[in-house]
Amino acid sequence: MSVPPEWIEHRRGDGERVGWMRPDGDGFVVIDLLGRERTGALDWLDAEETLDALGIGYLADPYELQLEDGSWLRVRLTEVSEDGIRMKTEDWGAIDIPFREHRVGFPLPDHLRPHTPDGEFSWGAGA
Image (cartoon, rainbow, N blue to C red):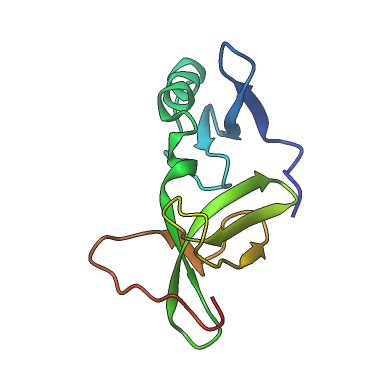
């Protein structure tokens, strides 16, 4: 999916894109870089401030990808764009742990979610 033409790109002061605002009645819904709606309708200034405060730090957080067998695999995002979301299996920064790359579409699909510390962790097949 490409970004709908009605979404308004928002960049922070240094020029880094931090998301979009989608017109909704008299307000704007904040959409993050993963294509998730993060608020209800806000006025323009509140939407901009919300995106600036949200930033991009959440992209460095661990995520979980649901595999075909239904298990969840812990991953780290490596690239996020309207063309898709790329990730690799979690390696905790070690250079000697094998990893696999995965790709899903944009926006964030249901089978990719933020990691929950109490969730089950799986290396997944062939990792």
